[in-house]
Image 1 (tube, helix red, strand yellow):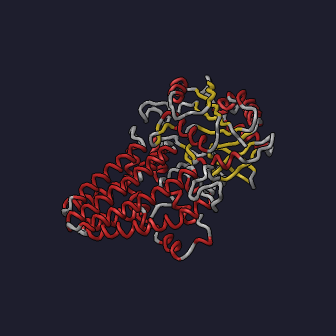
Image 2 (tube, one colour):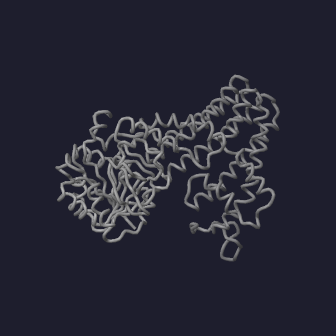
Image 3 (spheres, helix red, strand yellow):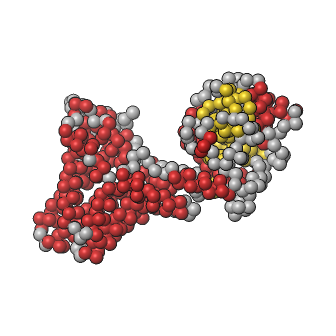
Length: 488
């Protein structure tokens, strides 16, 4: 398994240089993160812990900027190539003294999903060979004229170069290499070719250059201002989640991702967005508690807007590598505080309109039930090492023991979409605009009762299945006492 990566960040990047605030190319930002930093953090996310970064043009500036960045908390050996104006094969050779085992080789201006490196890290590499990650889907190549083309037979690379007329794949600029790569580059240098591709051609001629497909995963070469804009659009376009509900997928994300694209250029953090969303919902709760139509309508719109903004914290965390366990908990606590305060506002608003004491009592009882349900979910999350309610929701569908499932569990799973924020926020907004506070109130009361019943009924079996709670009571363990051992 590969643990070290070499990153080439030595060239001038003349086509991009001067188009991004006069920054050296490796520091040019895409969605709020510099190219080199994004490469390092993407590799770190894939489990790479040691880096060799080869710098040249404005190298000291690049080194200082990255070294001062608290997010880049990995070991980096900085290597200077004073011949950076020559071919990039020379930059690769500069890394030779720092690697003595198979290593990843990447370019600082190539974006990629971390899953690409997960795939490459476990590729077997013989002592005399190297493996290049290639893209066979030629239709999705953004700038084919500039791409390095590859002709492959089976998994063997036969030809590589920008000027190839016959090719069936494109070089992604991501390799896993043995020390043989250095020998190939030195041989190419002796023949007058200073490029990395020249060294690859030498290995290909020896039958020692293999390929592995990227299999549809994201990557992009950022060489021009237009490619930079395309890269940002592509990164933002990937911010949706497979677990997104219908409303989120078809409406909320289309707005939140545009907002996140703007926020990514600012110092705003995901935690600040989570807290802002909570405050926006609290304002909505206060407005709805006043009990008149104008404030009800404004409250409904604000609640829906807060639901849209609620997606931005996770989007910024993903775009800027700012996700953390603490951030998960802040998001979860902010969301649940928002729900509780909003439901209190609905209950008090209904009481303001009707003057009936039972309305307030029933509403606050529903709030108390949801607080108990949330507390149980929090116990589960704490013990499985997650701060996201999405973990509980997924476990509810998958981890309840088969013998405990029945019609109510099946029904709960089938209508889970209705209890997602994206769905009920939109419903509440429409009802508020229609001046139907009474409908919002009864949805809250009945909905919280159903959610609480599901949580109370199945949290126990889920936690026993995980070993969080004991399956039987013994003299050594009091009934209901949590086992301190964390679940696997």
